[in-house]
Length: 452
Image (cartoon, rainbow, N blue to C red; front, side, top):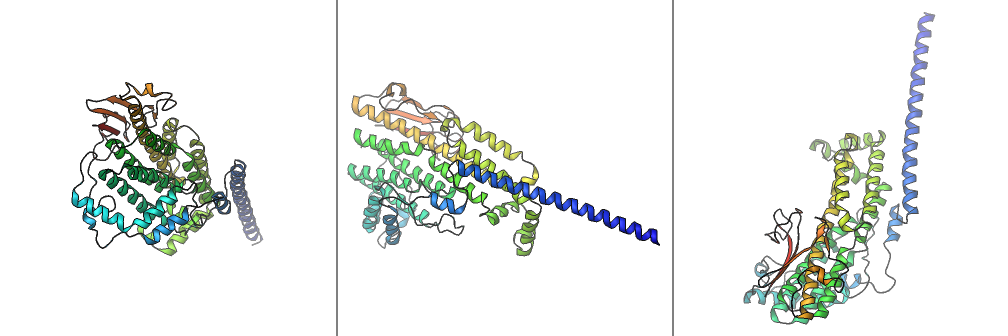
């Protein structure tokens, strides 16, 4: 009997000892992870970046003088998206009708509809132009609030469409000064989001920049710009090459992940591939979240995500043409991560793809800049240059490089004009074929073809 009691006591002691060792090991491991997170935060702050929602809020500075946001917001209040006397089915840009290809006359009924739409939004256009010509903009949004209202993003797209329509109609009517002003302010409108440290804002900014480049490209093709106007548009389009906005977007996202401010959203990624019964059941979701947290998988995934975001922040400091190989390597490493980093494997590819989209935008912008330089040379000398190299250094310091292919932008004279192009999304030379998707699909190039 005594021996039996002794054995039970011994087993209990062993059990308690094992439990104590496991508890100490777990606590130690947890504290080590917490220390790593704290160390990461210190390193980020030391580098001059925000590491918490509060710091991020301060990082998005208020303009010292003159805030364009007030004029934009006033525009959004009064914007008439569907005026009574406008047939949306025949409205270009803002409606259902397709924009006629460059060099093709716009049908009279389409012109009339567009003019009516512009007239209905005349006061709003004045405000948009006034806002676009201000040097700084900070929208009244709480950056650190996960429930922040970003409705002004869609309104900015509406304003961009309005400027594009104004430029299109004005050029058709021969009012070149007005067409140029609308195109110029379309470029400047895109800059209203350049300091907003959010990936969502950066994606919208790229959409605005693509719209502005469409607008500028059409005016160049029409040949209605003088040397001074070409130079001003070139300076604005050159801003699209900058990587600062992307750096801010990644730094902002990192500060929110670092502070666990996006904990629930981040953990949503962890159960993204789970059965629908888990995702839709609040109790099961909370159970998964609890286990994810207790097992330290949440913190491990957070740390890995912070590490990749730091790499992306540093990558934005490189020249665009030096980034493609590195972003591909990062993508490859993410795909090969161990299974316990499942949240990172789902979450990070979306953020990495933003860099891919930015490189495509830079490729397109540099193609447009090459075309602007050729047009400027033609306006000054009365003839086309033989090569882009002959435009150095008067029109650019070096021949622009396509960041997708890693080679110089392509250019050649044609029977009626010239073509400047880069390889498009597929990275292959398709002889300047813009295709139906303007360079974003396989077999297409980003191109500017001028024939007069």
